Length: 190
Image (cartoon, rainbow, N blue to C red; front, side, top):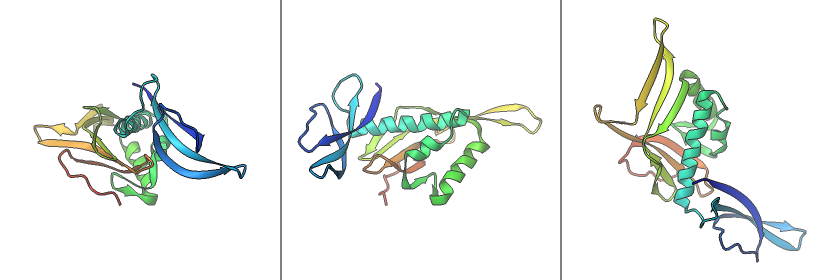
C-alpha cells in the first residue's frame, strides 16, 4: 500500500471528512482577516480511510531503509536521511556536528552497504517502531579478492536478537536510531 504525505492549508472552518490531522503547527494570518492552520494530512492513495500514526511511522521506517540503500548503492547521498532528522537527532550515537560526517564515513567504509528487512517494521510505542534487519557490503581481502559480507541482527548461533529502533518526535522527525536487543525497554525521549 503506497501512502503519501500532503501538506494543505485549511481555513479554520473547512473540513475534509477523509482527512486525519497529524499536527496543527501554527496559525498563519492570511490577508489580515482570516486564519489558516498548516495541518499534515495522511491518506491512503487508494482513497481508503486515513492511516494510523503507527502505519505512518512504519512507512517512514521503510523510507529510512530505502534512503540508506540508495546511498549505499551510490544512487544518492545521505541527504534524504538527514532531512528525516530532528535538529537534536541521535543516530547510532552520532549527534550534533558529528552526525553527518560520522554517518558519511561509515557508509564510505562499507562499499555497497545495503539493508534488508527480516520482518516488517512494527510499532512498539506511541512514536517508536522497530524491525529486525540484515546488512551486506563488499570489501577486499588481503590478497585482493572481492568479499561479500553479511550481518544479521538475528543469529541464534551467537545468540543475537537485535532490532533497529527508530524514535520519532511529535512532528514525525527522527530523534533517535539505535540497534538494540529486541526486548530492550523503550527509553524516554529527551
